[in-house]
Length: 102
Image (cartoon, rainbow, N blue to C red):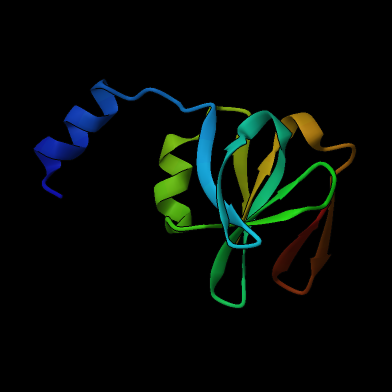
């Protein structure tokens, strides 16, 4: 993607409220309001909803991140959290590393 195309994408940015996902072999559209987090497990991008159900997403994490509304934010290299579902956030410092827990 060229810099011009990236700039045009930013100008025409429209956050989505649903994303396509697969659960038990069935294609569904998952409401982002119900998503607690989107994470990478075993090299697969997975959305986890408020009831703990897991959905496979076809896009890469950075591609999904570009489409998400502002209540979603990256908490580490492999996870994006929905701020509306976070009850507490604890950061633990160990040596020079910072590890986050939800």
